[in-house]
Length: 144
Image (cartoon, rainbow, N blue to C red; front, side, top):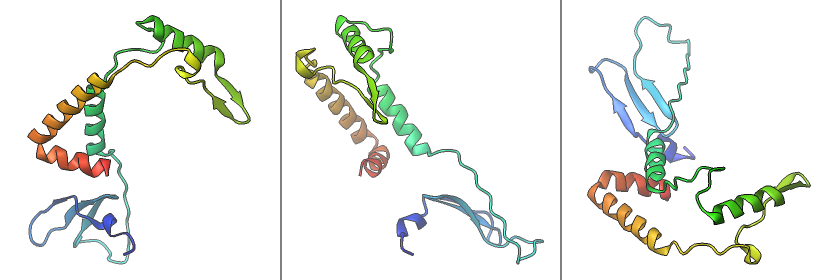
C-alpha cells in the first residue's frame, strides 16, 4: 500500500454476520463479503458518484458566510461600475491566455478596508466551530 489514506474507512454499513457489508473510503463505496449464488470467478465493478457531502456542506457554509449579494452586471456602487468598465475595456486574449487588469493597480481605485468585516466573520466562524466540534474536525481536515 503506497497510499494508506486511500484505505481509511470513513463510514460502514453492516448486515448480519454472514452478510456482505459496505465501507466508504476516500475513493468511494465498496461491498465486501460473500455473495451467494454467483460464480466466484466473475468480477463485477460498479461506480456511482454522488459527490462529496462534506465538501458540499463546506461550500454551502462558505456561500452563506461570504455572500456578497452583488450580481455581475447589477453593480450597486459607482466603484463596482468603474471596475466592470475597466475589466470590460482592458481584458484581452494574448498568446493563448487572458490578461485581466487589476482594478486597484495604478491608482484606478482604492480597495475598501474590509478588516473589521473580516474579523467579524472570523469570530463568527470560530464561535460556530467551537459549538460544533464535529464540524471543526471536518473543517480542519479540508483546510489541511
